[in-house]
Image (cartoon, rainbow, N blue to C red; front, top):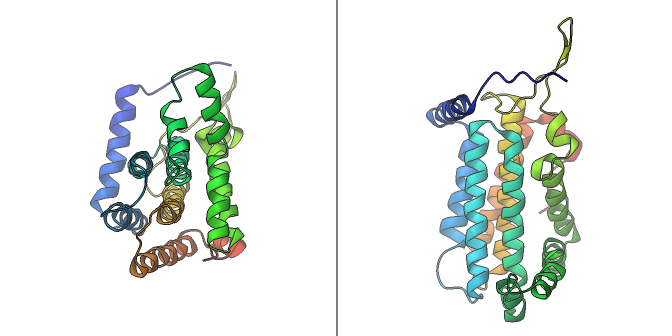
Amino acid sequence: MLFKPEQGFRDYIEIGQANLAAMMSEPCPLLSGVERYCAFLQKDLLTGEQEVTPTAALLFMNGYMLYQSSIATALTGHAAAIYPLLRTALESACYGYVMRTDTAIERLWLNRHDSEAATKAARKTFTSAVNDAADAIGAAKSHPGTAAIIKQAYQQAIDWGAHPNPRSILKHMQEAKDIGTHIQVDLTGLHNVGSFEYKRSLLACLDFGMLLGIVIIHGLTHVSPETVQKLRDLNDMKEALLESEFPETYAAMGPLAR
C-alpha cells in the first residue's frame, strides 16, 4: 500500500468552507428543510416552562446543539463525519427522556465519574437508554413502529459513520484505477455540493431532526396541539423532499408512518 496524500489541513478547511458558502448562497429545499427543524426545536419545543429535571433539560438542549453541528458539518461536504454527531444528539435526547422525571436516574448520570462502581452503574442504565426511550415512546403513542424507527436510525448512524464500519469507509471510495505500478484508490472526505452523498447527508439530518422532535416532544410536560401538528407538517415536508430528491428510495420505502 502506497499512501499519497494530496491535500492538507488548510485545503480541507478551505474546500469545506467553500462548499458551505456555496450552499448558503443559493435557495435549496434540503437546507430550508433542516433550518425548519432547527427553528422548531428551538422555538416550539425548547421554550417556556417545563416540569422536567434540570439535567434532562440540559440534555435536550445538548441534543439540539449537536444536531446543529451535524448540519454545519454536512454543509462542508464531510458526509461520514455527521453520523457521530447525529448519534450523540439522539442519545442525548433519549438520556433526557429517561431521566425527565426520575431523579434517581439523573443522579446515576451526574455521579458517573465518582468511582468505578458509579461508572458501571451508569453504563448499565444508559447503555439501553435509546431502546428504552424508543419503547416507551412507542407504547405511549400506541405505535410500535415509532420505536422501530428510532432504533433503526440509531443503528444506521453507527453503520454509516458513528463507528468506523465498512459503509462509513467503502461508500466514500472512488472507482479503482490501474496506474501501472499500483491500483489507485481515492477516498473522498469532502463531497461536492449537489453530489449524491452531499444530498444524502442533509436528508439524514432531516430524518434525525424528526426523531429528535419525537423524543423531545414526548419528554416535555406542556406541548400544545398546534406544536404536535407542526411536527407532523415537518414530517410531511421531509417525506416530500425524500420523494423528490431520492425517488427510487422513496418508492422502495414508502412514507414514514405517522
